[in-house]
Image (tube, rainbow, N blue to C red; front, side, top):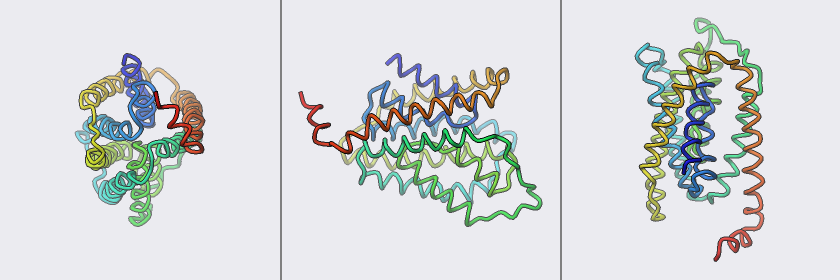
Length: 266
């Protein structure tokens, strides 16, 4: 379990250093370091990500750096999508969900490898599209419900490019949206797991959330002394390695489910 606590600290550190992307480590840490089953890890990941994001959104709310109109346009469809994604998870095996998660990791790494010089549109002349924002929110929400990631690497660009928000507002708004949809997805997973007689580990969730919050504070302090661009590319490279590892270890289980089950028998 010590490795699990170290993993929780790394989740918080990465969030503090990069501002987003750290939550994508939660499921692999729970599966490979703690030993949680896939579906349980995804459910617990949503609770942990939601707790860390909610705590992180508080300073932005106090500084009035949350755009509530974007919370409505993007957040509400995102919450609905997360609930739908969690409901759809009953039709997928945990292994298939991990494969989808690996693809999301590779997508996140691609987004992080891209240059950060995103042109922020002039809010005064930018034509916001509630329909486009809502559709992306719904899509990101379904992804969250299926694989348990916060999706900040997709939400922030959407809020900036489609919503016309400056980066400061986009980050705070994103954190609140991530918290809302993560808790919604987690509540649905509680019912899904209960039908399978599976219970979440509340102690694990609490400890991971606290360690993640503390790690994010430390990461924010350290991040002021390091190159953000170098950190992003280094983390992106790590996500590529992890994504490929998850693919390699789970593709055989999908192609040969019988042999995979036989390995589990005593």
